[in-house]
Image (cartoon, rainbow, N blue to C red; front, side, top):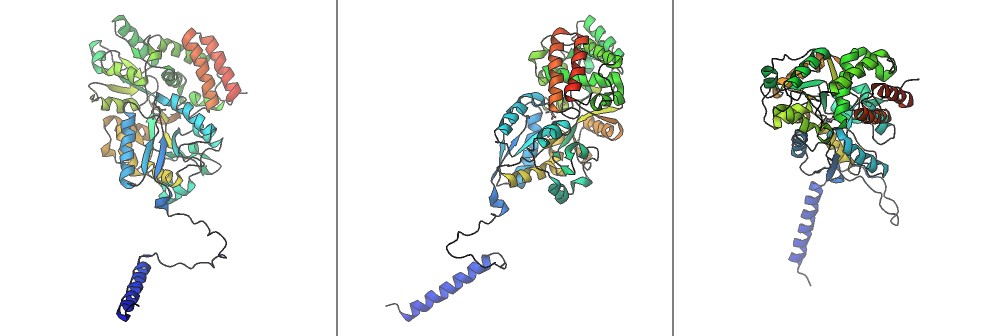
Length: 442
Ligand code: GAL
């Protein structure tokens, strides 16, 4: 038999314990009548913090300058989300040539990463939106008030039927000519302003035994091509290539392709086996005078501890001053993302001022948001900010803005043949056919 005193003590303890439990529980909410005891309890949404504990993010930022930028943004993410493991599934290869193939396979097997890097423009709309692989993000734009800070020019490029499909982290410039100031000076060459001045300068360099133009693998040849098309045609006719207003078979496009063929005569013979970083290094190491590359090259030069204006200089690709040929990296939310809430946490960081101001100064890009802290950006990037605000903005082919994937891949096939045979007439005919098959040409 228990003593009376023991029974009282037990009762007091039980009451006290229940009071403590009640105090810790969340405020009571009215509970609907419980189902009959035999039915399984209805599944309830676990609280957001327990819904996921990892996020897989897919990109192609593994190399010089690029991984460092991504790491800076991951740091911000981890500080804000200490309980979410960040799985970095980046696949090496500039411009995403390898990564996008891996991604396509995963998407076709319904094994998407939670979030991946996609270019604003036709790459996003013509592939991932068209194939219903990504979720609209209007709810995030509302919550985070992103429409107040994201550029109005960008929103249509990531939207369809009123739905916004990605979170832009940056603006990159494609039409940049990087040069070695010491080489130009030693050869008495001024920074060229037109294609003709550029070719004359490269003739002089070649005659002096200096490698004029560093280039890498095939996508860098397409990158060079789009900048020469812009230089030769001007912004309006360049835009017309992508909306059907400029005839790919016209004499003016022929002249642009002739200029491109001429530019290629100055390129290093081993281009096909070099990455964009290899080609960029030739310039800062004093082994070539020029390279044409997007401004991620600037992120790379900084990582190499090269000094602006001394180790490298920059200018718009000759003939393109006043034009900003742009692209924008953005992140998406997979339909069926295995870790949806954590992916949303990632997207919030990617779209935030803090995330963008950590990422872009390292990556060599300017923030997509209009409220970035200018003091964090170096001289080159401040000049890019000024140009983005004042120049005529046109889109990049190589980096997903102006042509859908199938059109771009037909252009790429034609380009591969052209790089081998250098036959401009055949190249132009193939480009006419590509526009008919997959572009807006009739
Ligand atoms: C672009 C991408 C840039 C940069 C570059 C080189 O397509 O938008 O962020 O990574 O490729 O890899």
